[in-house]
Length: 167
Image 1: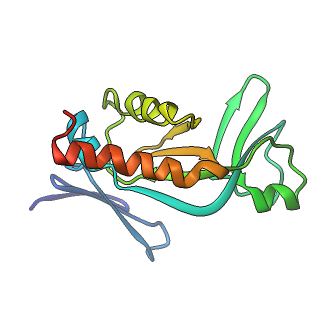
Image 2: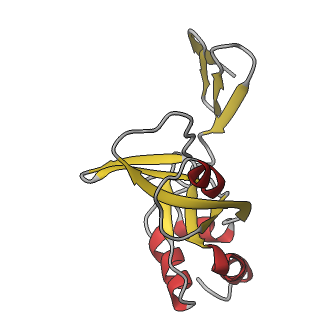
């Protein structure tokens, strides 16, 4: 296997290996697992429910000591997704409490239909879904009180495609 090197980046045809600048941590991101085929994505959703509670807040600037898991600059200010515990400690404004479900299938940002189909399934069960697409995975924030129903819905969707009940 051939590697191409540039400073702390080594690239092979199979994998991209990113080596932390401190030289301590290595993160591997597989290029070959970035899936675009909707059926394949749905058969391999592998949803993971995180135990923490999250909130969405909007601020004019990022406050010190805040560690958001996501930010987005909107016209009205900087939107944050942050742990509820941290928002409460820092008196950040928010409405609602959410649970995070990550789809562990490594989906391509160019995949078509995954967000729409998953959102439709959740909507059939009256579950609102706030999606964040990151480089490798999609993350869904659902109302905390509906987290178990949302997880069951996603597992059921995956099982339907695995069994061939849905195509």
